[in-house]
Image (tube, rainbow, N blue to C red):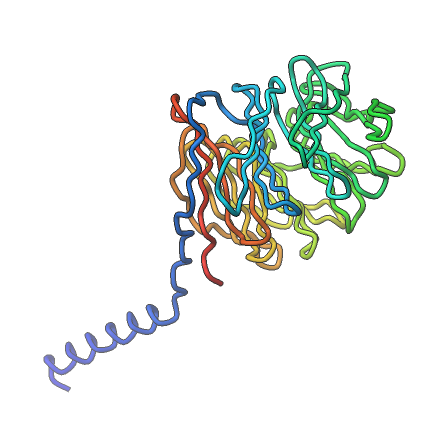
Length: 331
């Protein structure tokens, strides 16, 4: 073989190798497409947690610094109500009744909202400021965390009173209930833990370390894969095995995440931090980054509409506020 032929043959091998690698490499994951934007005029305060009422197709936005509970219709894309309740932090829809339970920090209380009339009908006083709140359907109880405290208060909706408290091992952050395991999962941000609460006894039955995710804030449940996802403020997302509590996966995300949401149909975890929304694919419990999308500095909350898989966040530009969505990428 001549020198010219050898060079030509070597070049053809290199080109063939590059082509084979390019063919074998997976295509980049498609990004979510921009969806709707709902404007809330003359609204400059920051939001806290965001929830979806799937039964009524509503977005429930705790607008803490505006001291309102904002209710947005997801079909018509319009604001239905802005209820003046005080420093609203989180909302627990009760799918079995006509009520929303809103945690209000100052003064410490839970506002009970009639979901049909969108009027406050009761107020449940607590012994301090409140934070994350959930409705537990099996025992028909509302659980609300004591902000920076060491307990979770238990509320009986029928009597509209605090009827107990769960002692927890540190300062609470976000909280979720999983019907399949019949457990409440709670981030303990000062101890880097997920505390597991049995609502039958109102006691902590497990404590699972979240390291390398430190100061865990966002929390979501993946019942099908038996995973709890916990997001650290240090830019780490971990997957915890619900059977053992061990770390099953970890991935880098944007920093200072406050809330995360899980799209069960698409197997995606959305992690909301300042200016960025990280997207993580959960495949068999393993975590892989699917990139970030630009949001806004105050867009640190997120919720997924299970009916459409749209992902929502809320934010303010200092003059008006907005609820913005993205349509999910195709499978």
